[in-house]
Image (tube, rainbow, N blue to C red):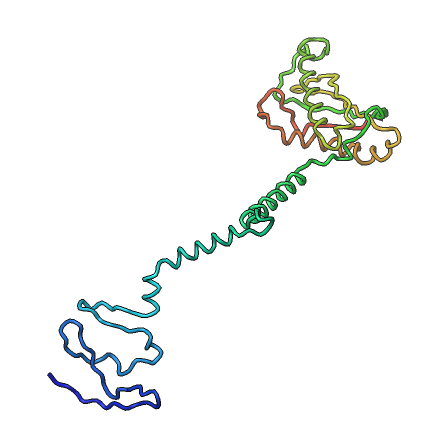
Amino acid sequence: MDIKMQNIRTNGENGAAHVNGSTDRVDGCNGGRRPSDHAAEPQGNMGHAVEEGCNGEVITSGDDSESQRNPGNASGEIRRIKDELNKVIFCQKVRLWMVIIFIFLLIFAVIISSLLICSVIHEDVDEKFDPTLFKSPLYFNGSFQLPNQVFKEELFTMSFNESQTLAADLQQKLADLYRASPALGRYFSGAEIYAFRNGSVIADYQLKFLMPEEQQGPLRNFILSREMVYNVFRQFLYDQESDESGPMYIDPVSLIMFLRQ
């Protein structure tokens, strides 16, 4: 076995020894010396010793291995947190965890209350009106075509059952569309089908609206103008969901309307 002589010198006052030159490492399995991977380790690593086992594993010692061998640190931290939560902070009965839960419940209650307040349906001032003040009548006349109806002689006479049944169905249809209108619903009074003519079937109608006497001018010019009443009717016809082949289908192009003076 070859042994290499090394120079050893003393460093200063504390007598620490330094080894110069190449160093050998003792194999833990067979006692042989092997050259070190590097000549010298930095002094900052002096707190961690490294040993190589028989199977080549690396065994560390020092602070890292100490933390691994001490799993009680985690349970100690949990106990510390529990102690903090159970700390009495008021009147020897109120604990910290109670205060935290109370704060969360308070925030939750504020959020729920805000949502309830926002969801309240505010009463529309425009919905408040007295229908007894609506006394001034306004009439619109016109006609439309029912292309899927076959004209019969009985339809000439409105007293016949067939004429009355068809007229009642159409009147209900007109009443529903105008009462559902947000702008015109409060003013609508009624619809009347007063005649049928040949041409598939052409129905002559009359619409009646009532207005407050003091608002006749603005209503005639805007809300109850011929353009507004006509456009509501026409839009309804274009949006109607009934089949175009149905007997109550009204041709939108055939709609005629004028203001009766």
